[in-house]
Amino acid sequence: MLIHPRREFPDTLLVFTGTAISRIWPLLLVIFVLSLGMTLQYEAWHLDRFTLTLVPFTLSGLALSIFLGFRNNACYDRWWEARKLWGALINTTRSLARLTLSLIGPDDGDPERIAFKEAVVHRIIAYAYALRDHLRQDPRWDDLAPWLPPDELAALQGARNAPVMLLHTLSRLYRDAWARGLVHDLHLPTLEEQITALTNIQGGCERIKNTPVPLSYTVLTHRIVGLYCFALPFGIVGQVGDLTPAVAVFISFAFLGLDSVGTQLEDPFEIDPNDLPLDAMCRVIEVSLLQTLGDTELPPDVAPVGGILT
Image (cartoon, rainbow, N blue to C red; front, side, top):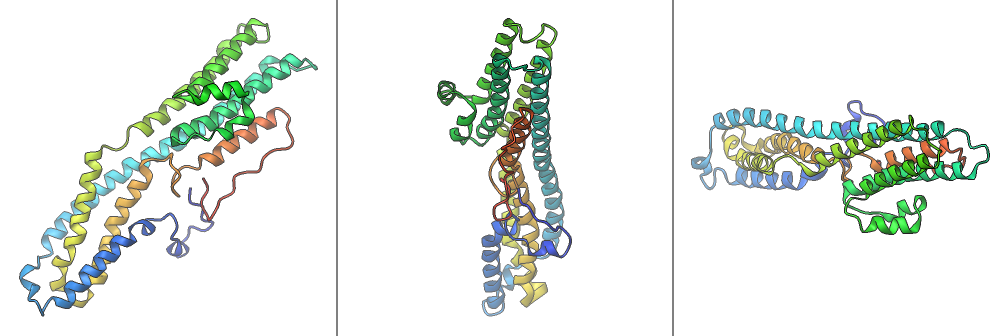
């Protein structure tokens, strides 16, 4: 996620990293060169025969802006839903850790209770990191290694869905604790409800990840925007003359920028500057849960690098 301390005008005019201009400037450069060449040769080559009126650009530009607005709203809804799901993940992991520590009861020096609480909390932390890697399709087993036994980590590496396997492990831990009398009969369903909540959160994230905006919808938008921007100089050179390159670049920046924003927000789980900072949110979960165990040597918060929080 792009971190910028000041968002007021005109400070935001100077932001480049992670913005639409950082992605579309090569296209704007091509449009500028095309417009400049047409402007210079407009009269020498009698290009007035190939110019268009502004009417088709006015009508199509209005329709295109509405079309882009709908697409960007759809993409932003995906981004915002993903953020709400990860907010729910943070709350649910905290609740599950709190319930585990409170319902199991005080340790009173009992090594069995202490070991059980640590095992559960560590696997909840591992689950958050495993879900992050699952959504990014980039396994980073080193982040899971501190929280899992070697044999369990090796088993996860061969699984197609590591987060689901960790939820199965959590359920098994609670079942075994219930069988040993560490968990009361009335408390076991309460703990299982939290695991079910984690399952639902993961399902929502996988739905966003595996169901992108329909390709035909995206391709149509890209093609219309591209045709509009590259044909624009032919429609305005007869009216604006020497200012054609500047006007064409300005209008193209608006449409290409809107199209680029939608593309950046479509998949919120990647590592682009405008995607969700899953690393930072996993660290929030890790610190919160370690504090419940009484740990005092906590890892630092994830800091932005180059103004980008991952």
